[in-house]
Amino acid sequence: MLALHGTGVSDGIAIGKAFVLQRELPEIPEYAIPREYVEEEVARFQRAVETSRRQLMTIREHIPANAPPEATSFLDAHLLMLDDKMISMAPIDTIRSQQCNAEWAVKTQSDVLCAMFEQMDDQYLRNKKVDVNQVVQRILRNLLQKNYDEHEKMAAGEIVVADDLTPADTVMLKHNRVRAFVTSLGGPISHTAILARSLGIPAVVSAHSATRYVRPGEELIVDGKRGMLIIAPDRHIVAEYRRRTKDILRQRRELNRLRTSRATTRDGHRVSLLANIELPADVRAAAQAGAEGIGLYRTEFLFMNRPEPPGEEEQFRAYLKVVKSLPGKPVTIRTLDLGADKQVDGGRGGATTSISVNPALGLRAVRLCLHDTSLFRPQLRAILRASVHGKVRMMIPMLSSQDELFRVLDLIEETKHELRRERQKFNPKIHIGGMIEVPAAAISADLFAPYLDFFSIGTNDLIQYTLAIDRVDDAVNYLYDPLHPSVLRLIALTIEAGRKARIPVAMCGEMAGDPRYTSLLLGLGLTEFSMHPATLLEVKKIVRDSDAGRLTHFAKRLLKVRDTREVHRLVEKLHQR
Ligand code: PEP
Ligand code: MG
Image (cartoon, rainbow, N blue to C red; front, side, top):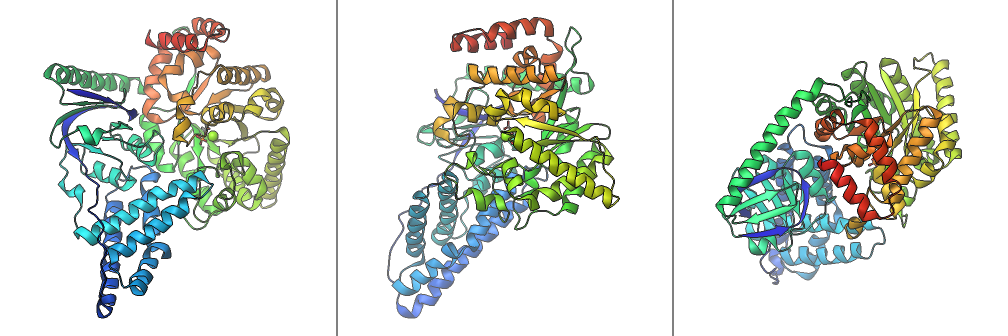
């Protein structure tokens, strides 16, 4: 028996047989092609590209309807790459000019492309090298081994172990009803990890050397919560894990009973638990979890994977769909947060951020909207028009200065006048909130409060900007700490500013949906939690078992603790109780 530790990226336990996905390609042969056969070689290359395209389209068709938008977007990106001249035409030139075999022409071109991406300053573009590699490998596999596809050999219930997986692989894993996966490489925010979470497969990444230690067919246990891979477990361990699996299922059933109960603490303190969504279709999962509304609707996903941004009418219809499916419940529509790692294909976010050295500090979110009001105005109109149909709230991301807020408020007023002139209906009293996710906004939250109807703390960015760690950079992930004293102080400051100004303070960053922090956040006085629907019921259970008064004392004391390790220890102890 051997246990390997990695990073758990998707919860759950799986017990099953190993399927080791071998990705190594045989040596790429290099040989000359006689002049009269050159066009035949070109045709062979084109057939391999076509086969690759068909394979990707098949995978795309098999994506479950409830899969996240990322599932299709990665495949679309790979399909687009197949159309790119650098991949589909350049090797043809090489075959013709050097009279070499197709595999060699593809390899030479892939080396050129990888070197090109390697030199890019922009981390996001540098990462594109991985996608190029995956597409090139697919063409090479088709050239070398015809239609050979390892996925076909996988059986339902197996646990896939690989060095790395492409997003397309991950979708196929789900399709083949694979039970879990483990990779030697990758990080918790890689494409593959994001997909695993939303597809609901237990997964562990960066379990170094996993492919070296695991033999095909060997029994494995994957513990997605603890980030552990157990190879050839003895029967006691298997029995223990079977017991735990039963416990998890029982807990899920019990939690489901809380769907319709209120999120009220034992001492009568009421909080709201809402859901974060990316697309209108996500409302279903939110309703199933008993969410009291939508605390964050990330509208930028409507702008991705398309050449042109959606117009006002399309946006209006999308917002209306969400509002109508949650009658009487609040729907917080966040204005566009494009830029940084959230790029669009044909939209302007990509054009502006790709030249930024530090895109996360660049023209992102409200900055981009104010810079390009032709992008912003149709959205403001669409949100305002949707506001007569339900309890719509508008939320502005990434505010960093009062002036920025004033400019947004002026634009909203102008848009209201415009709509009035056109006799279009809207709610004139629509609530406007601001995301507090830049340290400057948290420190001066009292200056923003008089002009806003609510705050929502975005801990993902607040932590990134406070601790100076790039959210998408694996190398500094270990510094990401929601309990860092500076983060806790900024959260406390924001809640306090909201309390004094008598405006509600919500939180919609990942911290709000992490049960480890629920008690602490209750103690700090948070009244609205918005999260991925998967953890909502667990958070509700903690709220219902809590004593808010006692937690307030705890939080007050915690903010005074001067040893950060002690802060971690106390929060962990509180959670375990
Ligand atoms: C956040 O920053 O915490 C947040 C909720 O926004 P996003 O993750 O979309 O940047
Ligand atoms: Mg954010």
